[in-house]
Length: 310
Image (cartoon, rainbow, N blue to C red; front, side, top):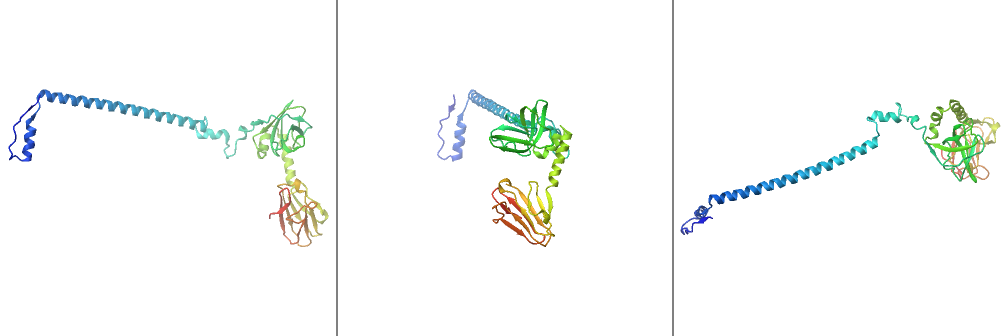
């Protein structure tokens, strides 16, 4: 135990002397000093060990969580970019060098609509219900018949008690019976490239048919053609009124929805009259007159009436 000197300091001591005296009078034995040092050392070691263990645990947990997150991100990136190692390899799967889509990768993609088709003739078949929204003009079909596949492009589809689908003529023909109808994921724009690989003769016929259609799109009219009834293939009508006036009879609005027709007057003399079907109107009137050289009208039908839009 410590011994304490009980000598009372003189009243004349300063505060500093009192502090020094008190400090000097409080004496620990050597064994007591060793005991205190031991307690301090043990406490410090225990605290250090606990802190180290806590840090190791926190670090390990953080590394594991980070590693798990990195692995998940790598898997997501790999799934998203595909299985090829490089970007060039991945692009070469579906894109040609000129940037266009590689059709060979898509030409075999067909969707089975599960429609039960009934053969009508070599260009037509029917399916139950109103399927005109599925068999749209230009859709590419792969039709399974006894001899294999027949490839065709929808020319029209109409509904009464069932949907009748008509294919473009001068093309592969249908045979009876039809066991399946599938629709290509490709649009009409790619029909030429898609079917060319299947039958070069068929595609030549298709190209000739399309060329013939485009050739009939523009037509020059004279007085001898008047009155002229607009055909389904007409797009631009050039009117030469040298020999006399020309009347153009417009088609019914019910069969002309979303159609545009351009009429151009190239001669100053005489008149070009655009005449709506029956009582149907063009810009609110049953007829519209063009009297000036170089007059031009672009008429659009919304299914109810015609409007001059340019």
